[in-house]
Length: 111
Image (cartoon, rainbow, N blue to C red):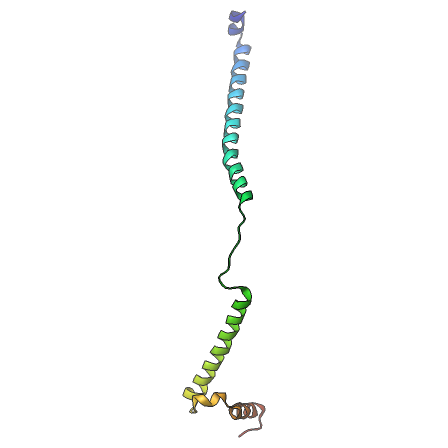
């Protein structure tokens, strides 16, 4: 019986295909098992960990700092512009009369 199967060319081809197919299936299964193990451990680690981002400065403090920096830049710019570029005293920027005079000029009521 073994001799008959070995002499039959169809049997050899089908047995070889079956062997190859079983080897391919086994190697695919082994690869998929190897690939899934690290992923499952990563998923398990991810489930156990909670990622919390700790901010050094809260958002409300960031907004406040930006507003303070904008006001500071405007004050310094006004002092430089009025005191050094225009021939005035830099401390006069903080006087009410200076700003009323500037607004009068802008409205067209001044000299």
